[in-house]
Image 1 (spheres, helix red, strand yellow):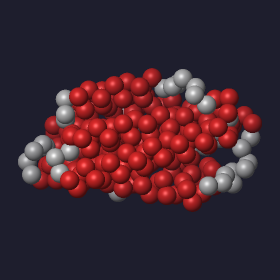
Image 2 (image 1 turned 180 degrees about the vertical axis):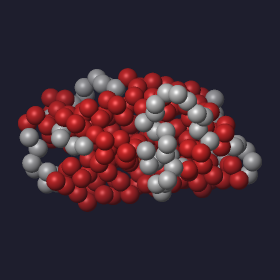
Image 3 (image 1 turned 135 degrees about the vertical axis):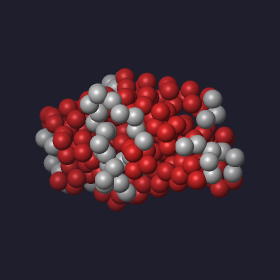
Length: 230
Ligand SMILES: [Fe+2]
Ligand SMILES: [Fe+2]
């Protein structure tokens, strides 16, 4: 694999971020499964939790292989820890819809954007386990789609509206904006284009969410999105 020595630490840090995200996703999906009112939802969420646990192991092995000294590093991204805390508060309130928004839609969308970008870099560096990484990405897409479907169904049934979801989103987006800035520095240090990465991130919010996002004078990495939704 063509990873230069000076690239090992930034790549290991990106992987550490992803590993931590997978553990958050795993715990969240397990709790969501216990809160979900329908059997089909419970089944999907339990299977998601199993997949996230496996993803965390994949990233842990990659870090051990690439930069063993950095395994178990303290989380370097306080924004991700703060994100976990407010997500856990929503779980404690049994606010399933807010957790679908924060975990499956936003956090998984961010993870997908990172993974897709890293994938290009890893292919370029001839990294092994391409098939495994593609399977992982495929599973993440399914988790993200599930979250969007759950919210769209809740809106169609009048259980919540886009304006309320947008208000709940604000605290989470403020934290993802901080993560994007930190991760952009890491991408830059491994000679990946940080602006390409930042624009990937803009693609993950559903159109209905962006259309209702409150206006602000603050620049946001996630504002002005909506034309390229999946
Ligand atoms: Fe995952
Ligand atoms: Fe996931």
